[in-house]
Structures are given as structure tokens and as C-alpha cells.
Image (cartoon, rainbow, N blue to C red):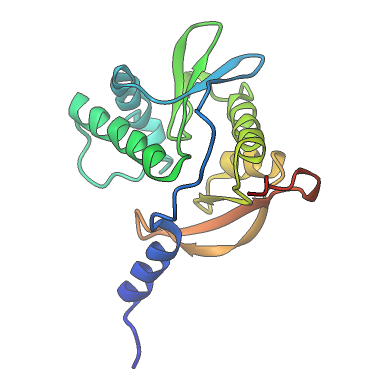
Length: 193
């Protein structure tokens, strides 16, 4: 019996987005780099979330998958809450990235505030997040789902050591994505026990 494309998409979504057993990680500290602070999102991040994710150029470049029409602060609050629930269920997730020089949130959900594009912040934050994953837990593989035309995100992925692993369909938008990934280096093996 042949499955419809929709069935295949749902099965792919189940494989990559089903809540795995909780990964046991130490209490989550903030991560600091030379220019950035990565921390858990807080309710006050709802306003910057809306500003960043509903910027007309960000939308035009399809860096955001809208699952409903653009909205106000309620949309930001729902998304911050979703990010926090993800951390709670899985022990990892998306960070709020703060530029230390300005104390402004410049990234939520791996989308940099447009006024800060081209400064290397995405690469700096991604490297810090990967280093945290390798040192803090038992995560052995990290994946990035990137739109085929999103050259800046592809550049960031390759700069941090990710390699193209294949193509797929986004479980969020139903659109084609490139799958980039990186595996834990053997010299940084996951803790046993």
C-alpha cells in the first residue's frame, strides 16, 4: 500500500520531533562569549521576538515559517513559552542571544535581528551552543534544517563544522530543506553513566 506524501511528512516529523527521553543535563547556566550572552528565553523576550521574526526583510527571505498570520505580543509570548517547554521536555532548545555591548536581545530562534546581520554573531552563538552541547550532555549529533536558498545560514553551518547530510521536508512549513549536521568529536565523547 502506497503512503500519501502527507503520511511520509508526518512520519519524518515524528522521527525528528518526537520527545525523546529527557537528556540529563546539569542546571543550565548562561553561556558567555566575547560579545554575546546565551540564556534561556524569558517572557520579556516576547517583544524582541515579534520585532525580529516579523521584520519584513526576514519574512521576504523566508527565514521564518509563519504558521499563522503575523500577530502582536501574544504571538511572541506563545513562542517564548513554546521555547521554554522544549527546554523542559528535552533538556536543550533555542537560546535568547543578547549582545553584551548593548544589552539587547539580537537573536531568538536562530534568527538574528536584521540590524546586526553581517557581524559574525550567528557563527559566534552557534559555536557556543555546540560547545555547550558537547560538554554538558549526551547529545552526539546536532542538525540544522536550512532553506536551500538561505546562503547566510549555510555559511554559518559550514563555518561551525556542519556538513550537508541530505535533503528533506520541513515538518513546520512542508517546504524543502537542506539537512546539515555535526557529530560529536571522538575526543569529546559523551559522559558515561
